[in-house]
Image (cartoon, rainbow, N blue to C red; front, side, top):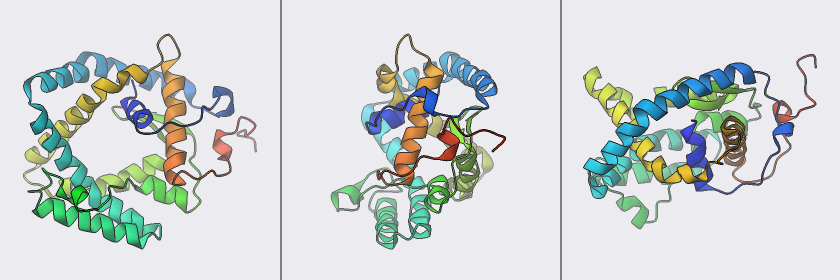
Length: 236
């Protein structure tokens, strides 16, 4: 399943979007990749996450989550500046410095108590903020729902994550694996949001696209993306 969408729905309630409003020309291929991802999650990632939650104490898991969220902060700050939000960018840089020092490498989160709010920005949002359309919905292997725009943004997100600077490579890859398990563990309690008996692919696709538009426009209503309009066709 596309677990990212479950987490997105857990963070914000959005107005429902009818499936008929979304143009999804790659649906046949997307469904195959979706099924592959769901298989891997069901038989590999989910059991590991359950074991991790059972063995690792909650305070330790919380510190692990703090560590990886802190590593995402420089990327958020960069995108704040690229979107012209200098104040938020400075705040996020301050958050990163405080948590990396007083928070012992990000294991703790004193920045929140000091008034440095946590934000979420990435290059996909920045592209959208500057007018780039989302493009078609695409399900990425091992990753889940994305769009053409967000897939390009994901490459830059990866390149600007400080985890790339960690050496040796074995340690970097190990940390990336722990990050995936930690994220999956956080989602165990959110699975009840999934619609039982419905079409999981459509539910999670719609949830992802709604949430991304919400983030791109900072919660403000915008004109619909032509790629999400059923009347758009490849001949146009």
